[in-house]
Length: 169
Image (cartoon, rainbow, N blue to C red; front, side, top):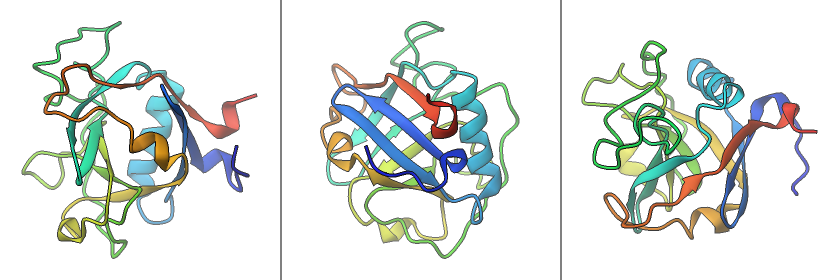
């Protein structure tokens, strides 16, 4: 696996094809990065589906309320929920939505991000300044590229586990 310079601010998302290592941008979006770490440490992201995956655009996941087969799973409702924690205020920055960046999914309200996020398959600069960027894939983007497409996918892929690298033995 890739050398991890800052394990406390790195998450490892395990997919069926292998690990995806994400460096969190705590200096750019500390609230969003902190939320991802808190939900990862609580196990909330484990077994959550990618409910919206658009080829050439992005893969969205993180609906901890509706997207997990071990809790209230409902694929038709996946993408409509969040966590029990309060929504987060936008942390917009000049960081572009490049291939491999994580963006906070939200409703039309800029301050409605909660637990859902997306990983960009390509540069999506039309999103710049509209969605919080709070992470960057530093290894395993090839596994992201293999996520099943669809809105929702017929057989959605899942995040098997999500862990803060500092917590992994």
